[in-house]
Image (cartoon, rainbow, N blue to C red; front, side, top):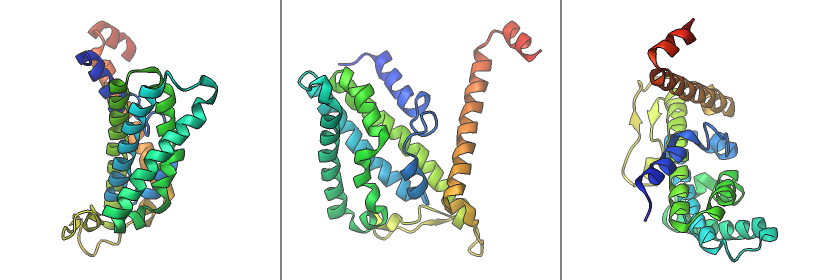
Length: 226
């Protein structure tokens, strides 16, 4: 079992405090290339969550048997085996989406988000905590990439969830802006991803600054204002 405070700490770190995209700025390659729409960002994040959770429990279970000197190659082998399983699963069940995501599913092997959490957390903690850490770190990546992909798609094309039919046949994307909306090409290109990511980081910093100001005693807050 896991204590409630420990669970809340793991969840808060993964979703917000140590968010891999907004705080650690890791995984920029898929962040720039895949998040041209919300569906791509969400589905790649789901694949990453699966790999992170399974690799976390695997490494945590074997941590006492892995020699320290060769731990990194062993971690990479474990992650590579799990990514192969996920890659084959996507190819078999979601083949059309698999063709869109292309090389980025196999590249999860080299994703510094996965290897960083395996080395920094899973190798030092029990399996349950390592699994939860992998899940919540992945969900933090999911909401970030999903939001970024949705913003880029909305600004660039006026739609939301373009490509959802590749996941659930028969569903159509939402047309949120007029059909004659010309779109902003910059939002779809990598520079647009950098700009929007910077805006999201600024928004997160603003939210945290506001929350910190509310926690200050009135006298301290007044002194800080002067």
